[in-house]
Length: 180
Image 1 (spheres, rainbow, N blue to C red):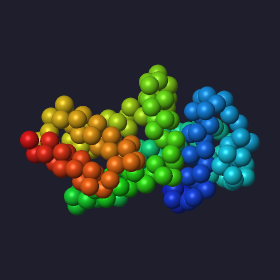
Image 2 (tube, helix red, strand yellow; image 1 turned 60 degrees about the vertical axis):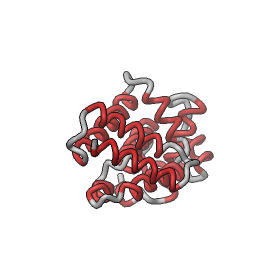
Image 3 (cartoon, one colour; image 1 turned 90 degrees about the vertical axis):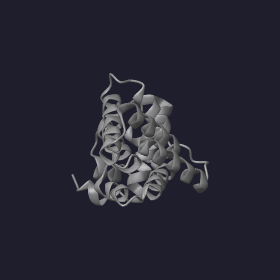
Image 4 (tube, rainbow, N blue to C red; image 1 turned 90 degrees about the horizontal axis):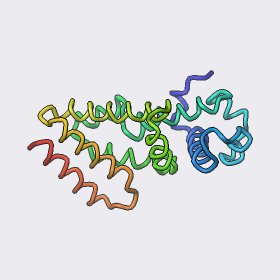
């Protein structure tokens, strides 16, 4: 299988992930096939196999990985933004992911609710890693405050209609809580 790290920003990669999440929501968990995915993503099956192999579950696991790395920002590039105090840029980057894969919120909420599934368990781990990231960058916050910051940040990431001024307001609230 090819090195997917080079393909993460590729338009076809995102089209496939978004279409797979959409099909998983609309048709039911794993109740879709590669031909349907190919049609919905408007790519060839061979391209799907190139990126992900032939397993539907591998595609969905990659979607969960991308939620962690790209939406939540659990990667070195986004950590660097946080170190530099560029939270607005990091939050904007999270919101850009939703433009590439608009089914993420529904996919996340559906699978997060089933914490007995491997996808639900993986999403819970992503949440825990994000709370850990908050505690790392804001060591003075207690667990309740870290969870509050998590909820505020994710709420802003999942709210596509709010303005940049509102995002700045969200970050002011985060900063206020983090300093209290």
